[in-house]
Image (tube, rainbow, N blue to C red):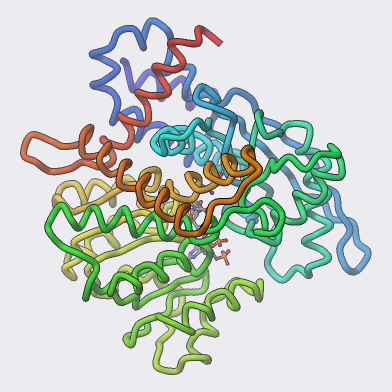
Length: 445
Ligand code: NDP
Ligand code: 2IT
């Protein structure tokens, strides 16, 4: 495989799409050896086919705000690969959303979904709509207008969207309501639904719980546990919330949260009512974490900074892409951090990952660590298909088992000669092999 030529061709076709090119390069670097030793992949053009989305829908989303003004946003769905099952992946509503970001997320989703062991393909979608400061009525009208276009592309056996940044239970409700009205079927097409109308227990907690289950396995390779460990989290949304709950349950102490305004350091630990307060902060739609320090005066707010300068044993970035750079990586290591598990998608820059690998840190990428969210979405699809709900414990056990199995797969494919586990390689190789073999079986499409 001529990696540089593939990257040059891809860049020519998608100029300036930095996040997409970054994600593709990372995967190709990991799988180069596997592709070179399996000529059948090259002759079937697997690489050239897997790096391009199957199709992209872009559409206009006009809606009316509370002042009667017409607003126009852009909407997208990137259906990347359905070799393993129906397209599956979240919707992101954030002003930064563009095609490069959605293609990177859709591409990563292929390999993540492959790792879950469930039959789901990869996709992502979203809009540049900014939920910040919007009323409930505005969010509802926006979601309805968004679905008025998206519904034609999706279906329980075709493409099953879910949440991501800016899309939680409330938005899924409005989106599903409109979908149901248009197709006149209650078929469960979105995941992350409310518990009374087809949702699964544990789905809200799943990404954060799964991330901590995965980190627990990483620590276990060094005969360590979360008990007594200090943990830095970034973000304060769905993933950070679930991770904070589980870290506390396992005896760890969470000391930071962050938002676009800066980070909060709470030396007493973020537990109990403080975790519940995260939900209030998020629901306020104000996009800032500073108010945490008004509520809990023992905490300090660090304006415009990231939490990676705080001394910790374990770091779990749960906010967004490229939020942890080389300098942050060096600070973490300098302060004695032993484990970095990515709760968000691609939060570490390639330079930061290089530092983690050089220093042989326990480091695992988002596509393995945060796969519990989409895995539990897959379990929601199974329950919908059976028209039956599993109890909380059953879903949690299945999630835990899936995370252990993803960890074992990473160890199998990522252990280097000196015993160091390269989780990036392990996740990319294992995720790729399953999809590539399915594509081989299914012919040139
Ligand atoms: P939420 O919208 O619930 O929360 C995202 C959090 O990150 C918010 O607190 C958000 O604040 C914050 N954030 C956004 N940009 C920045 C920034 N530049 N600096 C610091 N904080 C920032 O989203 P999720 O928790 O669902 O998603 C978080 C990450 O996890 C994303 O990378 C997502 O792709 C990934 N993920 C989510 C899954 C899920 O099931 N929800 C599953 C797997 C991965 P604000 O919105 O105010 O900017
Ligand atoms: O990035 C992700 O895996 C998600 N946002 C969850 C996707 C899903 O379909 O549950």
